[in-house]
Length: 433
Image (cartoon, rainbow, N blue to C red; front, side):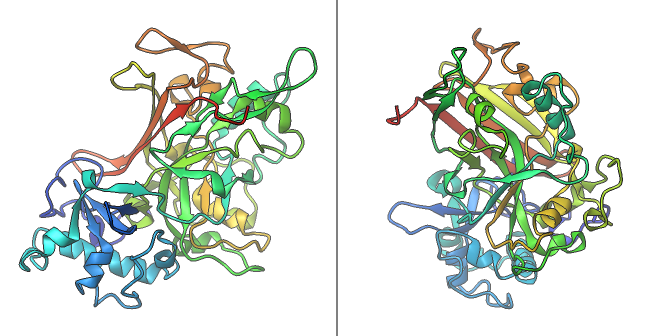
């Protein structure tokens, strides 16, 4: 999949007539999907382009998609993208090509019809972005070697930091789909049992709230129960990618996680970015991943490049700061276990995937401290506080703090394929106490 562009929609020379596409995260080569709402109108699907959103429901009603085979005219008049994603790659690709043509500077279909551009294009600043999919199942992997080593040293000092199975399969756990929220949603500090020096745990608000920088993929078409998805079939099933912040309460997690793994230390909240970047948009940035030793089992072998060159960063800001401080910069291509292996392993026992399922990478960390994707790593479990530009220290996230994450492929002289910003603010512990 690396090398030549997958299709004309990612041609770096493409230009659009829509204002605001010359810079920013959403050029014509991107065309990410989301769900938005305006005042007194129902939620519906859209595509981001520059400073605008293409109202897909309005475009379909205006018969702009009549030449897209297999596309129901009302599929975008919905509060989630699941129905569209279930239609499969042929329909996704056909619609992407059609939208790309309509928005290209050489096409006048929309501009030549009086009032059509005003109906079809919505200013992004005028819309409220919603959770783009109804997530049925949520799997979180543990796919970064550097993160696994760092966290093993924090949670199991003196022991082998890697679990015995780590280099043989993509370790993961099933998360809480009902706790997935879109960026912009406040995150309330959770309660749980905290280990105390007395030996008696105390039920209290977490004192070690952490972020985790992740990228997730969302499945479009799935597989029937009792069948599996092979690594060679991955491209037919992955609809697109989102930024993920898998919020973690490290003290709750530390007390509960043996022997079954994370539970209440993770299940209180996971946030995702509102725009789903199509797999086609990132194909030009696919590259070779890290060497895997020992060799992986046959069902996890890949014949194509599935590492993706995505630059990632995390900002952490206090209430009195104008802008957050960047505390982490890393890259998705360093992930030990890639997307194809993750999906193949998750379905290898015959478990079904469905439209809208979320598979998150696990925290993405690099080899140097500035590339660690969580505060537990950046502060060595809280032992070395992080100094912010306002003069305050952080070992973990405090009430009123804002965590913002960004991701992008490419850049000058070519287009930037951005994910937008995933940002959430921490609210004090609620009425659970």
